[in-house]
Image (cartoon, rainbow, N blue to C red; front, side, top):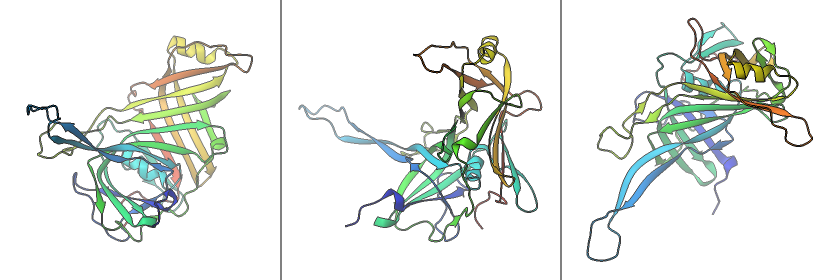
Length: 324
């Protein structure tokens, strides 16, 4: 009997219309998305009832709440990544009558949640799962100079997973071009100027979205996905060459950060955060090697006319609607 293998797994994704109702199986209706790891899994509580029966045995088993959550690690494919950005930030403003298209994603002051249906198919053992009502809780990106393809982590929350009799889509749509930048192509700018001596930068954008497991709905599964608050933070590591970052952190000086990956004039991704403040910290001396300084940062409330975060994606994908 064959064993399931990761290289034979396929992730299918489609935007979902109604909470609690997975999109129906259909050929050509889902995207096949590249991924490194998929750890969005169901969980269910089990407890023993505390009723007294006059002996030392536990009471009857009680099945509790059912949840669906976890993380996906995906390549920063400059076509496919736009799908994840849309689920996180909402559909973009797109310009261009033909490729290259420019998509601009922004964190709205009053966002709406885009839900998704996912199918996970294990071709080698003909086993298939369907997950419904998925929403993105947060996005994490770490940028550093290396020879590894750039990747991102998406933390997800959803309603339910079921074992399906067949794959949701036998002929899913793929993002055929989908080039992925490597780590050394990342460039960090501070206030519009290339940052000197920065060795690593991290971004975490949280949505605060949560599965509603409090509203009475007669089911062990969540009744909805609730909106939360944007939370934007990150990290910055740099060689200790002068006191520029130390002084900015001590004074609470605002700065603008921009992280960009450019493959060509037709393929690039830029993340702009206009108001960032470094948390105050010192410069430790750890041995005889090069001295580095590490700062955490937080984004401030956007000023009038500014964005909390803006992501500009240039690629060959015309839009991020569901496949026709």
